[in-house]
View 1 (spheres, rainbow, N blue to C red):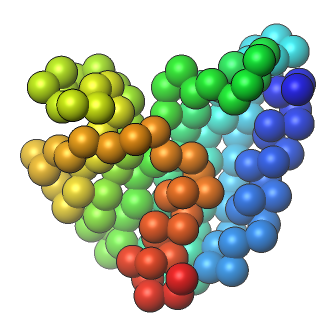
View 2 (cartoon, rainbow, N blue to C red; view 1 turned 60 degrees about the vertical axis):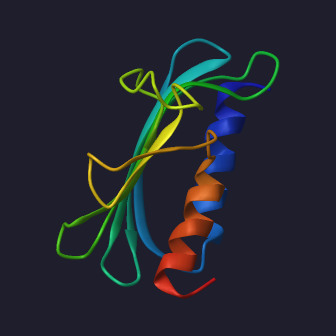
Length: 127
């Protein structure tokens, strides 16, 4: 898979979400199979999702780094998934979730954008 194909899949995921109102994504190609993308997603209730991924699609989709931060319409922190290596005591290190505050750190698998959008839909009561 080439990195452009992955970028297109992310765009389709955003376009197909029933509660995404508008989105802006800045993909950066880093060779044929690597890339960095940053996105800002506006949702129908005024909340927002900010995300970033550094991806290598040489053999499969491998996200070397990622962060998905969900904020309410009044810019209050709701949750963030990331794999920054700053909580070594978490059983799923470096993958974790900040839930409700930066201090509330929970074990987590490495979610995809589709997983995060599905969770947002549940939080909004739309899924």
